[in-house]
Image 1 (cartoon, one colour):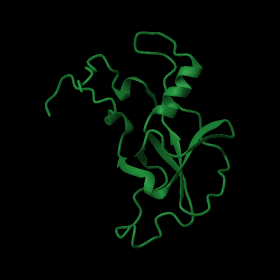
Image 2 (cartoon, helix red, strand yellow):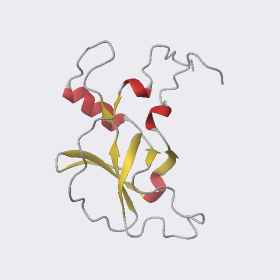
Image 3 (cartoon, one colour):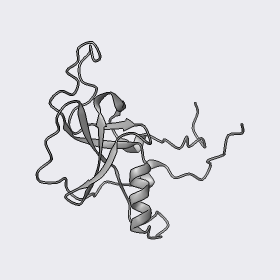
Image 4 (cartoon, helix red, strand yellow):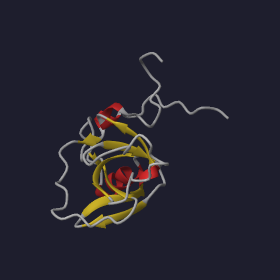
Length: 141
């Protein structure tokens, strides 16, 4: 199988919007092993000045694999056998998860994804550092 060249792919810092609307004032209670994620927001306008339609921005936000933890269930990360080193993430952390993982929903007009605690793949300090498109141009491996 041939690798598709992604030479013109956008880096995350070119499409992630850091001026997102605020989180809901009251979050739902999360029972059990759930983690509530808010996918990163997508900019309204490209670097070249082209406005991105809301429907496309919504699709991009849901198809991304990085978001911020907004709530953690009361039993999440409590299984000592499964998580011997403690929680994989905390509220406020940026995390990565599978592309088709979780339950996607709107809550108080905010897009959220509900995951199980073991569906978190890794934690990142800055979501713009992560490039899930394998942007292979420039730099060294």
